[in-house]
Length: 146
Image (tube, rainbow, N blue to C red; front, side, top):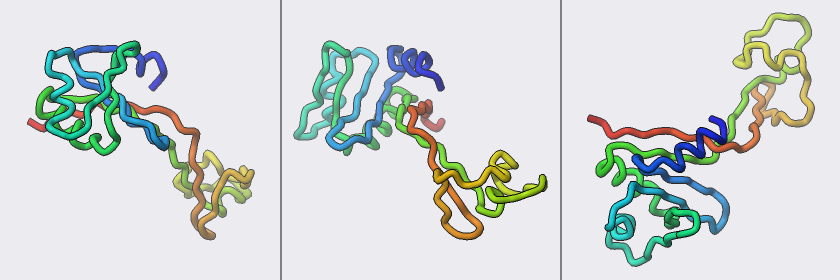
C-alpha cells in the first residue's frame, strides 16, 4: 500500500482508524468518526484519559488499549482500519542460495537461486535461511462478523 492510500485512509472520517506504533514510549494514535462523547468512549471508565492532539486531529492512547479499542470499534462501528508496521520475511535455503544449475525446489521459487549469501541472510541450518525486509506501514480493514 502506498503513502497516498494510507493518507486517504487516515484522513477519511467514516471508519475508525488505529495506528499501532511500536517504538519505546510511543502511544497509539486513533481517529474516530466525530461524536461529542469520543473522549468518554475511548476512556471507557479507565483511570487514564486519552490525549487529544488538536493540531493533527487525532487521539493518543496507551498501547495496552489496542485490543480493547479494536474490539469495541468493531462492536460500535462494524469495522476499523488498523495501520501497523510490517516487515516481510523471506525464506530460502543455503542449498538454493549457493546452487548451480537451474533446478529449484525452494519456497523462493527461484528468486534467490544461485545468488549466494551477501550477508543479509541468517542461516538457521543447512536447510533454512531467513531475512527480513525493510519496515513499512501496512493497513487492513477489519470487519465485524455478521
